[in-house]
Length: 315
Image (cartoon, rainbow, N blue to C red; front, side):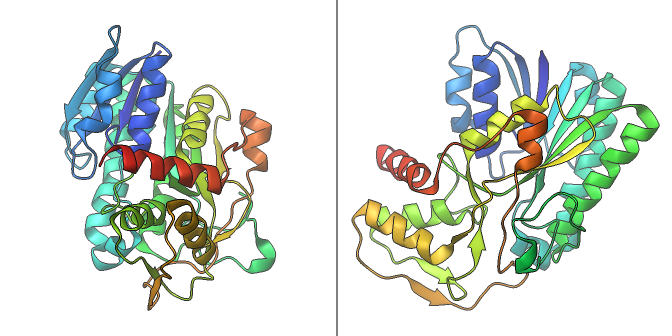
């Protein structure tokens, strides 16, 4: 299968690329390397039989349309994004340019290339907005009411996908991701709290919790997420699927788990909650189980231990 991965040098994208290359697929990667890294693709690039090409390009560029058309992928995995809620609040036009206009460029390229399908990385933590506790874990039938420009952009991208399916027969699957964590996530980057905690715990720096620590997230491990992307390449056409664990983990308990694993007894610091961030988030993955045969297999304790081990190996 010929694949195209936008954002393929990011921590989720590069893990997906590793899997695709390992399974013998031909892969084109596009990334502007603003948050991704060529080092993330070292494993895939070292594969002796690899069918991998890497292109440096911003998804905001109209040139992306022609690139996808020329490469003629069968399946496009669209992961490139401005992924920070805080940035979307401070710079909504920038966020829309990357996450909405960039998606339109991907869709146009896929249409002209005659691609069969797009698998899109959405955000289960933001498209539904602030969900009442009684509705958790949230299902895909819940109304989408995002409370940040980032969530609005992800919702709009989903609407574009549905329109392109109706107008042009371009299939899609939308994966509404929980809080993805794992090796390669930049501790200084996209607001991944697991990687931030890991980096600070191992360097002896204090960790800061924004808010009271009782806010919850659905932490899902990157290898589990990649498995969902691969399965969605030929299943679940036209569907939105939650990719999470169905379990809430508070930020305070996350810190306690990671501090214990790192051998740190220092308590965290606390700071005011950040604007635009949710108090609770948890996704029901039942539909993904039905349509993809997917379920998560990595719990928070095991996954965060893997992150700590990976960071130790790099020092």
